Image (cartoon, rainbow, N blue to C red; front, side, top):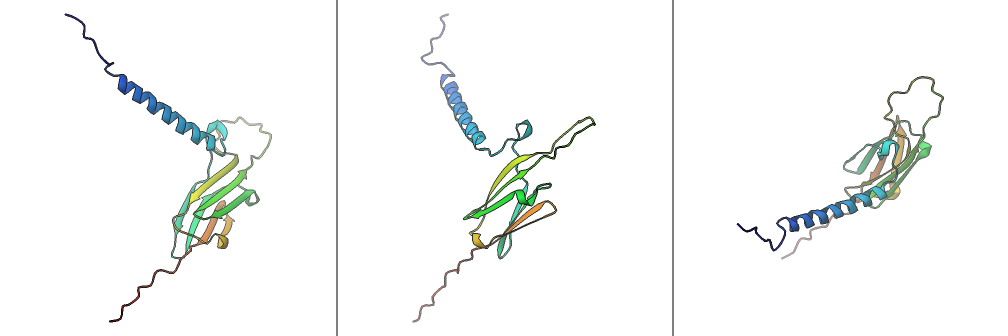
Length: 152
């Protein structure tokens, strides 16, 4: 019995495609990592948790920022998005006890949130109470079209 001769490797095309896919995924992941505004302890990016909802007249964004000094916050409303920047400073103290576990994050943070509807950015208002930043932005409600009756 003679060994079969393959014109092509049986899995060659598949392996080339997997290699190409892997290179593409590596390119995308490195691009995302380079755009991270802050990488905190243990390499994890820190961003505040948010909730976003709209009422009849405005869009409301709330961000959890416990322990952040409101003087360290910056809020920017642009067409179609809200940007929150800030700094959470670590309190320095001499510890005499053993330190077993830490999950708190410190450092700079950045959060960009897309808005679901057009807004009036110049009329935005922000408040901070009990560790929660609240940004209220009026909707830009343009007058809807008017159906013109046709006279006969």
